[in-house]
Length: 406
Image 1: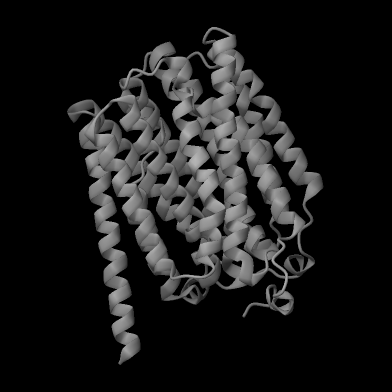
Image 2 (image 1 turned 135 degrees about the vertical axis):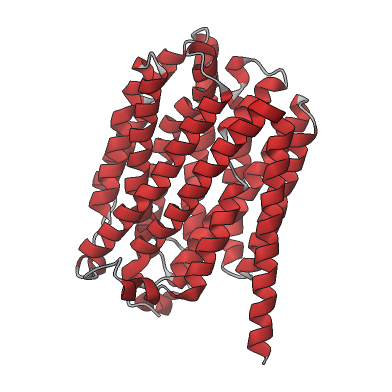
């Protein structure tokens, strides 16, 4: 048992999460309102205003999201080296907020790409230290609930952002740039709330490993952690950018102003399911819950591949949101449980490095398949990767049980 969580186990009778977890959740909520106001409209802005191809959308989204995940390696490792999390997280949120005006000013794909990359670098800088900070603050027996709550509040922002975008697009006659300017406000509030609203545990400030990326440190992460990295990498190939959900919705005849409603629906389901499944992760087999989440994603891919009627698309998008609610907090909990306390930042960073490469490959591949063979083939390919991931989890679990019974 690690030294940060040990003192908390004496208080098992309380199920109350620390205030810092709630504040971190609202920080995520505000930034997601800002980001999703832009991201829910950005694919259509690129295609209809800037005249880019779907392949270009896939490239921009894949490169941006993978860069965010890969940057987490360095920020997570640095937070372990310094023994501090908050300062890096504040810087990451501030950088994300500062990039929002670039989207409103963009007149070419180059500017959009620059803004998207800088925005995702900010996300990458804050992601691993923030997740490690959640693990540091949360009681050991409530880690699943803590990650679930933060993810739920984050996702509330992820559906409020597109909802606000819809309202403003209707009020302002599809003025993309005006909506992008409004998104600057919640982004700035997010960084401010983190700066003044969260106190880092003193125990973290006195720790700090000498070299988190040293070979001995990587070995200390252990086989259980590296298995999670491997499974997470294959899993990421099955879940390409959500920009393709928006484009699929437009194919179903949904007007430009209303297409963000697709992300609203997805994130409503995501927000509603993240905390309950986070609590469930504290009481049941993580492998079984992960397989269930993968089956839900496979179902989403098959539904989205089947037909472009708006009702069918909405059903598939809701399943997509459910799988996110099941799996995202679960994977974060699995990493926290498997990694040493002084290497948590590095553990989250390396996991996201592997996932980042998967996002880049998946989104570029999805864009190419979409342009050459159509959207159905794109989603069928996602279902195939889901099946491969499920097979890996089942085989590993069966092998692990066999070894333990000998």
